Image (cartoon, rainbow, N blue to C red; front, side, top):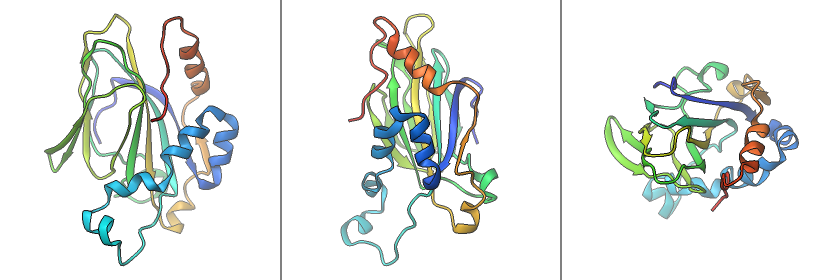
Length: 207
């Protein structure tokens, strides 16, 4: 499951039923969710033969989501793991996301490291160097880790939005809350604060 001791942030659990509640409370998330939850962006993660000729059976679309604002300080990383946050609330012990989407909101300038490494059975299959506004999708069954970043000014923080997207059968979906805030921290307040910082730059745009 990896280690997140070096990270901090706050999160939401929601389903399609609860999406409207999330968007009503945090309207600045509307364009992000519209983009990230669009099924078209997951087609590139399908096996090549399905992309060319389609599948004999339809794959269930994601219907439950864990959205996390991940904050990392300089010198900190995230250990190797496979996302499985909704295993416990769903009651499905081997549940992993259909796919994971990461939007980099804030990346300090002139840093070294901080790459997102993707692995399959401990074999590296990809590495992404973060930059503000970059949106990455990867298969939810892949191991991944985040290397620490260095070389930034003191107190620098990197911020990203991570959305784990799960496809549950009806009985498991019924156990997932339609909308739940996982932390008392003010998600909107954090992003508003970042926007108001003089010279703080953008908190990220979709591309």
